[in-house]
Image (cartoon, rainbow, N blue to C red):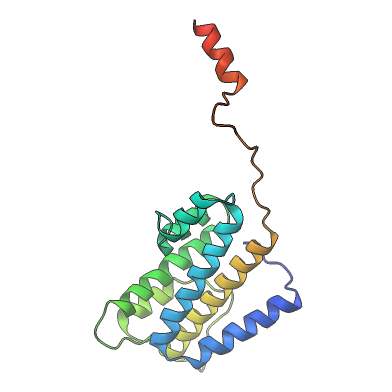
Length: 182
């Protein structure tokens, strides 16, 4: 997503999310943060899709009910850029490591550290930050950047406007092609 100047509401949302994520332990930060991204992606796709029961079914119980598929859809529809998509995939891998491991994981653990190294953020490591602090900061920064970008896209996107098609409607081009082939 292109970097744009944030309005005051977006800045307040960033501050709110930053405070929430900063106050959580690592495990909670990972699970709650991904849940926030999931909810924002769902809102983005809801805004993009035409309104109706089919869109609701797809997003609530259908093939786009899981976060990975929502991320894939948002990317292939051009709603998020490649860097955000790759960050999101890495964040999902981190979430899966935390969520499916009975051991207490930390941002400093080797497998989580490797995944955090893949995150692309617009900030640099401070000299006084150790690996755990840096990985946690980088993870939170990537989450906040994703949520902010998705929120921005949701605000500016216009609903697709589709012509209402009657059940018995056949486009003229199809009818013309049929007549030629007869």
